[in-house]
Image (cartoon, rainbow, N blue to C red; front, side, top):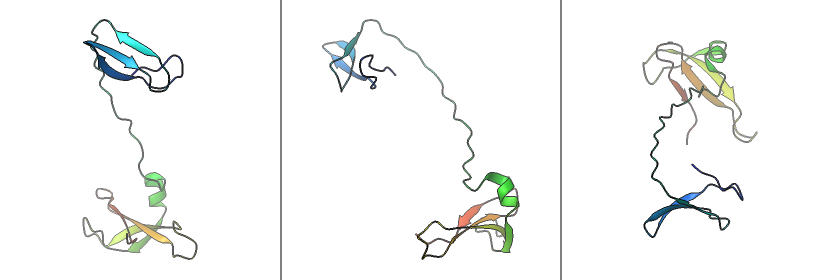
Length: 111
């Protein structure tokens, strides 16, 4: 990936009369490629916590209720209630199975 030295926008690639060139869509900058260069970089994904409720620690401190897990059919679940809609609407309930090997998450919201 290359960036324009004049305006810092990303350069696009296009063939031009048998040559390859990088060009800027914003300004008149053009860079012609004289030699073929091949490079391969393997990217690795960052491990991120996709749990917006604070991870395992927050769930284990949450209240437990009787609710059947749709995945493993266990009868208990953690519950967290959050106001995601306007204040005149009831809070949305989010559940997580108490079985650590399952830990399936679901909600009662209708979409």
